[in-house]
Amino acid sequence: MIQTDDDFKLILKTFENNQKIILTEIKKLPYRIRTESRTRSRAGSYKLTPRVKDLFKLIQTEIDRAITLLSKLNDQESLKLISHITTTKRSQLILTMMDTIFTALDKFDDQEIILEYFHISTQKLSEFILEED
Figure 1 (cartoon, rainbow, N blue to C red):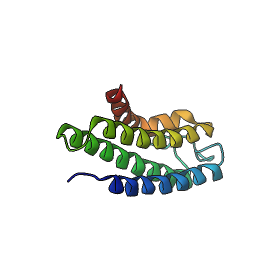
Figure 2: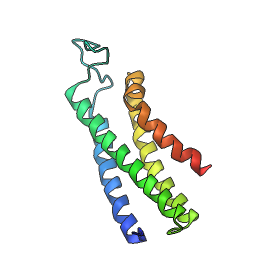
Figure 3: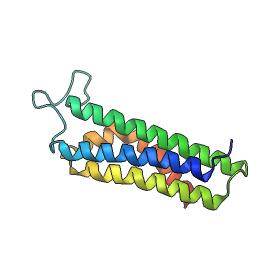
């Protein structure tokens, strides 16, 4: 099924609304994202505060949604359902929104935790950036 401009605008509006929620939550959180009582859990990964866990889950949902959308855009382009220019413009909008979220995460002191948590997802997103070049 071809994604019309109106369909994409609705999808983009959802991304924008979720981005606002995420950015608002990021602003509310303190600079430290791990629990004070213990820095690492028994499994060796960092123990995050409950609010940070919820935030990271929401961000992960948006990343997954972005990856799915970017894949569908590439599929539609390869099937010649939409043009390369349309795919590029739409992909750039989505990637810019995701970049805004990741830039907002820079405020936290524990960058290694963020990198560890979103490592695989950011690799998948970067594949779409490389495809655009």
